[in-house]
Image (cartoon, rainbow, N blue to C red; front, side, top):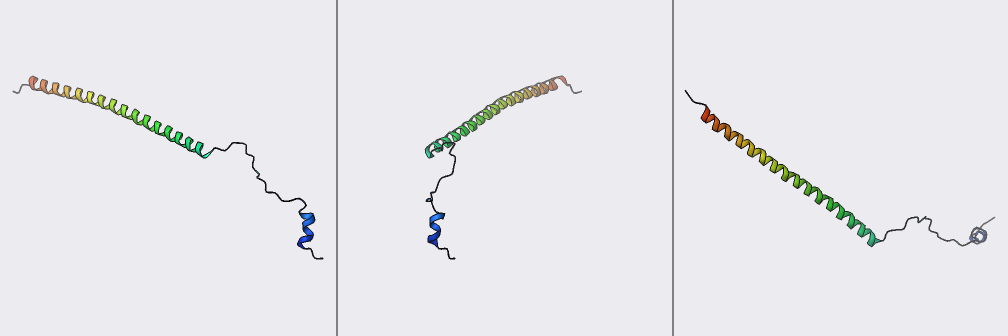
Length: 93
């Protein structure tokens, strides 16, 4: 028994074939322009964080330098005082 193409089409393809999209689409898709704006906002936040961190580091360094200068000046004053006292106090003889 020979089965040809024409004999199958009647009962095999009773309804016509349709291509259907099988996705749930629960979340709305973001447009390209909105995606670009979101990326720009993320970069701006990252840049702001870097700027804040560098400003904080700069202020800490400048505070450390002023503290270092104070301790350096104090050390020089103590050394100068000791040298002057050492010259005056120690008689050779």
